[in-house]
Image (cartoon, rainbow, N blue to C red):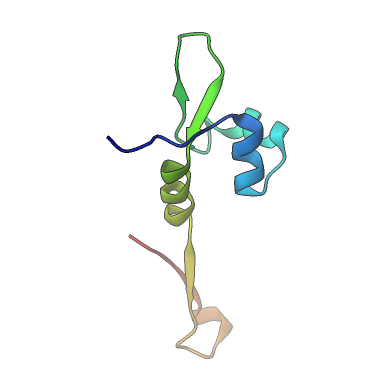
Length: 77
């Protein structure tokens, strides 16, 4: 069975490079995947799920057109 590599909130914040308070207040609205081991328990985060979440947020700028008005964001799938 694959190891879960669970991180607590502080470890996850450090891993993502964000402040703990930001993670605690934005995990739900940002769709950051979490695990609760009990209904009122602390949040835990799987490293692989955080990696997938970060990858889903990646934006590539299409600069094939030289005019700034032609630049557009492209969401990676």
